[in-house]
Amino acid sequence: MSLIPAVGRKQFKARLGWGALAAFLWFGVFMHLLPFYIMIVTSITPAAEAMSMPPTLWPAHPTLAAWKLILHISDVARSVLSQPLSRYFFNSTLMTLSTMLLSIPVTSLAAYACSKLIKGKSARTLFIFFIGTLMLPGIVSLIPSFLLTRNFPFPLPVAPTIPGTDTAFPTLRIWNTYWAVIIPAGFSASNFLLFKGFFDGIPDSIINAARVDGGSEFNIFRRIILPMSVPVYAVVAYFSFGATWDSYLWPLVVIQDSKIAPLTLAIRRISDAFGAAGTTNPQSALGASAQMAELISQGLSWNGLMVLGLLQAIPVFIFFIIAREYLLKGVKIQGLK
Image (cartoon, rainbow, N blue to C red):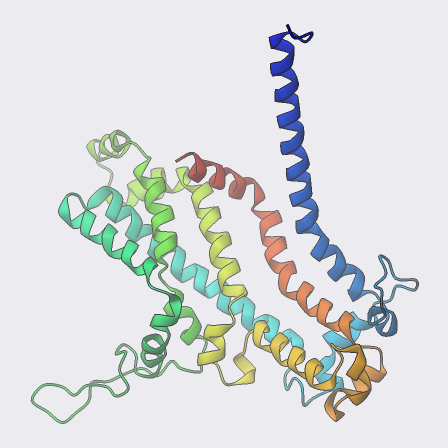
């Protein structure tokens, strides 16, 4: 016979399980915060110390020299960036906000129509169609999307001719413009499914009661559905903001003019210049290229790369802090569904 009662054994196992779960969660938090800590510490570390081995947990002489050099890199190394870094920030902000202003209303209205207005076979067909688009890898649509920016709205190398004539259909060339990034992101199938899943959970009786009272579909959506849907809008806005702000491959394909290039392309150009100069390799740091020699002599190395990473991550973090209340509520609601 055991000296510990059965109830005591169950309580001990429960406490042990909760303790292991708490330890696992804290370990996950630590592993997520560790890279940010390393980036922050390295960004304020002098160049020589940043490249020393083993790395230090905190710099002996913290400095903001790397921040100042990166923010004014176009003044020191014009061959690396032809435009001020603030210009790339402006371009990324403009593209991101414009994409959100286009994508969120279009996607939410389409999802509402599919959820509450279109019924039966048509609704199922649309739902299957959008699910199918998510199954296609993004790289598959890269070339058609590129051709679309060259001859909008035709995803073809050459615009087709008007039937019975030799005249080509009029097209709009949005390649190498802001619209080349904004328009293709105007509709997101994943955001559509998030909206539709939320709208499906709203009872039809609420909408029918508003219709009986004489409310139009637009007023029902604006006065009833929209206030109820703030959490899911916050989730979609956060995903849309992060996806557009961090987008690299698509802007690389359709943007050639540095005056309208986003921040991600500027960071890649600076990173490539660092690599060419040898600053990411302590063994070859002495073989710096001419275009980066001035920056290296002023104390830029790994600390500069960490500054670039923080500049890219800070806006997304700020957006999360601003919308965290509705964002967490929206994630919880979607998770319960």
